[in-house]
Length: 295
Length: 326
Image (cartoon, rainbow over all chains, first blue to last red; front, side, top):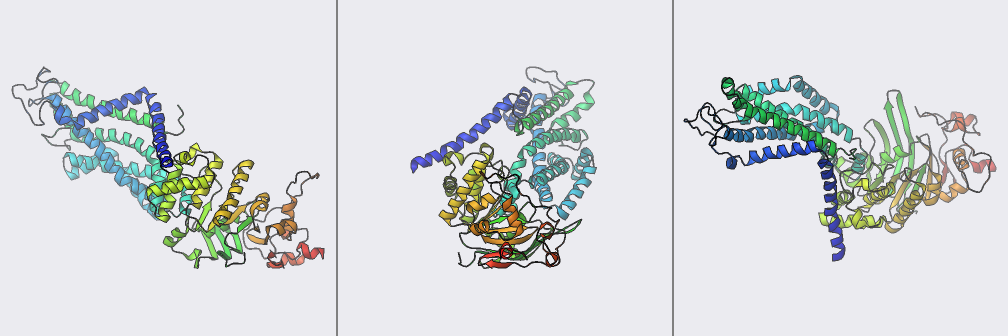
């Protein structure tokens, strides 16, 4: 019996590993996607280990070096208050990535169950949810986020909330649409006839079948939120000093555009890189996870 | 076979109210299923056989108006609350669909899916559920069950998927297995294998089976008793052997005449003239009247009741074969 038990356990690991290996191979065949992943990972590492990587603390000022050019002490120079630009960029990475990821998670956690309820139960539930979503979608994403941020007050948390709420309608639509399609799959009545209740069907049979779509939507929403944070901060609705994000760096660089363009270039390049990397990664994931892909 | 019936369907009618008016899909159908019995329901497409089966487990959309009663284990399935209904589905009555290719969830291994059913109904641990899944795969004769249990549906052939569906249906030792055209989507050789399996299931586990099909060969192969449906009504019911030896309803006679028999040289297979009436509203005459060569005034003005021509052999016809011969 113990021999049989071993036989039973081993292939399970082998099989899921094989599937991962296939997906991994497909991913590696896409150099753009791999590049995107590497850049995203680099940003994530920087964000997580910011306290270890940043040469100076968030609020550290050096009045002997104001608007200093890059040097061995300040690798990227300093700003108008003598703050080390490299350190600010690193701390800013942390804040911006946090906003991007948390806003997206917030939107997903709220929107996916709502969208699935609408798609699964249809009828009046669907009507109410779909109409409310339409109302939210009628406001352009940024107008909505600016309005919310203005109401909530400027802080990193409120920016996250505003951008997260702003991303909800898109996720509701996607979750609803996917659910509408998946509830018609033959395995749904099959599960019903095996005694499954609605919760089991929604979360065990429908949700796992839409993870690919959700992952791809997340890789679009995260850069959207990062960009949104920059815009809100530029409008002074973002985190307040001494807190720093890419957006606040841009905003504080604006008066010095004629004297020290580099102050705007650093966060600008970071934003472009991050947004690009997430988008490229999302494209790659979409291709790799699509079951119709054979290459 | 004369034991207390396991499932008793009484006066079951199903009506769909469509934009074009009401459609009577099933019209006052009654039958009983004994423990361990294989009951075949035959008829052409659209005669109401699938709708009948789906209404037994309440799978029809809300637009369907179902009346009558389905007694099972001392309760009326048509009146059961959702919680108790879920306890019957998959536990006491299982269902196998026509489409094995799409009835399994593509993102879970077959072991997970079989395991889900037994864990829900029998409250087994993850480990025991897995052992049970392997056991069931073995029962439905899937080779190398220890390996197959971890495979995804797309790694299995159609025949194997249907075997997995059967394994899932049998997971909790149900009393009744409803199989809605279980072999239609499969190759002929695979069909034979699946039928053998179902026969074996009945013998080993004593599961009563309701087998829906339009294939009379399948019925002859495995059923004990056969119900012939036409345009939503039950037109004949008889023990399988007797039905094939002495069919009474002209429709049944026509169906049997349309089966090609190897070795028998005939110019042309006989077809039944005409078409199935669109079952828009309940007809006030024999449903088969328009296509029947024996139709007369009575046939066109009255509804024939089901009546026994021999013990256990019911027919709804004014001119059954037996009486015409006499």
